[in-house]
Length: 319
Image 1 (tube, helix red, strand yellow):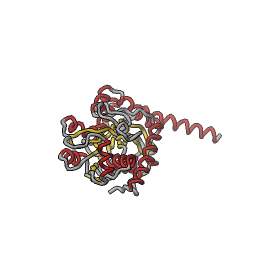
Image 2 (cartoon, rainbow, N blue to C red; image 1 turned 30 degrees about the vertical axis):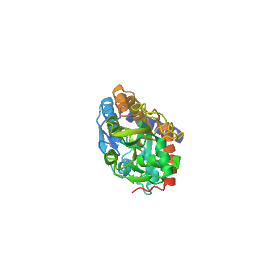
Image 3 (cartoon, rainbow, N blue to C red; image 1 turned 120 degrees about the vertical axis):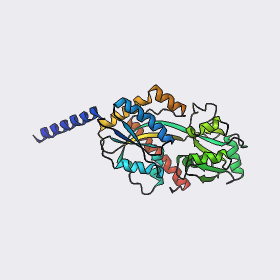
Image 4 (cartoon, helix red, strand yellow; image 1 turned 135 degrees about the vertical axis):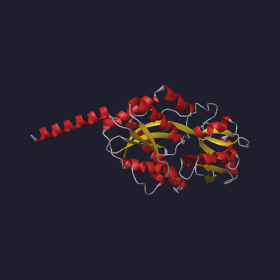
């Protein structure tokens, strides 16, 4: 008799959960973006919020909570009700932050990995009047004169810094790291010739490259970028298998019903396949990432392990 009752209760719970998912969303959804308005993460995120608002018939509110490398937004999202009405959008910094910060207000166990939105390469840039014409020029000079080359980043522990440290590990060169407070400040100084190199987010650097203010030497991903087809990869430039990307994904607080997770994952796919979204993402140098929640979870864990190697080898500590 107890087994019959337990089965009935489980069946009722399943029906209730499926009913919630079928109706979701019945009110506005808060989409917490871990970086400020105008950032690469924000630009990509708003393409999706606009499409989801249209798809669901409910407003998807972009809520920017920048600060501390995205940990502020993630901390708030981790404590939100597990009903699907608060979602987190973060970048590849989600993976590196688990290695950079000793006392995060959350762990990976506090979140459910839903899916990726897009990825883009960083582009290795130098002032247009620089004597450096290739990645090998940089490597050879760095080996001949260790510490003589100034290499900027958007801040300690940022994706641009992680990219730099991975490059240093792969090439065994000594470069002088100069951290800034964001890409805007770096780009102003590198255009002015006050720093030598920067692994810039491609969407942030394109205007300067097209305006001949910066020279693009290589992209950081394993394949070339559609918006810079004539610029080689780091791997093609003498650093075999080198691969580093800036990617964006969506998470939900632990405990959100699986049918709701599946519905959000389906909405990601629908938006990614929309012609307007696809064209806009491509124009900003983004490539699609087609993964279901299980595949994305595996990818995230691999990225966390990759970040662990970089952080440990470079001795990076978040500031």
